[in-house]
Length: 131
Length: 292
Ligand SMILES: C[S@@+](CC[C@H](N)C(=O)[O-])C[C@H]1O[C@@H](n2cnc3c(N)ncnc32)[C@H](O)[C@@H]1O
Image (cartoon, rainbow over all chains, first blue to last red; front, top):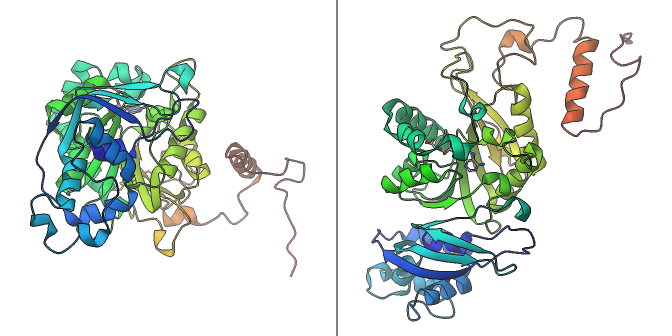
């Protein structure tokens, strides 16, 4: 699971109100390089919950990767920014698409129900009495 | 062989050996990717080359998702079978995978997804595999959550195999109740083997441009001459909101109207779909004089 997906997920266990952001407790993660696509990120960014993304990177032990506040779009998508090592867009791309959480868990903020992540796959199945 | 839905629950049916069989059969691979291509076409994403964030619901071993990847999109796959997902891992599919039951709802934030496909999976929701399962509640949870997670104007294309007209109607009804506009597109309606039904749904109020696309082969290419006037409702065809696959001949109403039986059946059908329908009386469907 990449942080892109984590950012979209909500728990729908009975008793949850919004069910997000799910608290990420990651024991193990790997990175895999993928090509940066600025147009994709431009469409995606307005839908990203920035605080949840920052919290997720911190949970992975990467406190420096993203700033507390989202940089302005003009800066992120500035001409040529994608080619600059360490630029905001490169960091955002890395955070959302290159980090794969392998083992750990997702915790529902409302109910504390814990969803385990096994081999990169979160188990979101609910028990019958949780639906 | 009966359809898999009648043999066992999906997480049991798609066990390790079935999952492997599923992905080593070149015939299955070809069929699934052809359906996925068509679903993506029906999704009608803007033709701007910009990758989108999509869902593949009932992604299985990732055959359908691979089509999305080939077109450059990012996707999140849902499946209830761990064995199928294990094969997807082995095949190193690009999408993120979730072990989840779509009948429990998709569990996503509202308005964040650009589109969704589902290939050969939704019909599973019509089964009650556990005593606690009520197909109607599960369809409601599924379509409700699908509607909420999609961005306004986004589409979902769900290819499914309905066992009968009732099932197909039930699926369509719950999609409409969730707020979707759209209907069923039937490709190759005249071929029992090639025939495929796609529920094409648009999120939010229908735009002028959201008219339903045409099914393939509906003008009778590959048509076997099995058309007869009697199979209005209970024939082989999938009944959608739009019955585009009817032959010209059948679209004509009979001279003396459709008759009382037809009307009663229609009313019952509308009731089942949750519409307010006047009670049947001795006046229902009687002949009316023509006045000028
Ligand atoms: C015929 S396979 C198709 C897999 C894939 N879409 C493809 O085209 O190769 C149907 C899949 O739907 C999954 N499925 C059935 N019921 C489901 C449910 N309630 N929630 C999630 N997935 C389900 C099954 O586990 C199976 O992997």
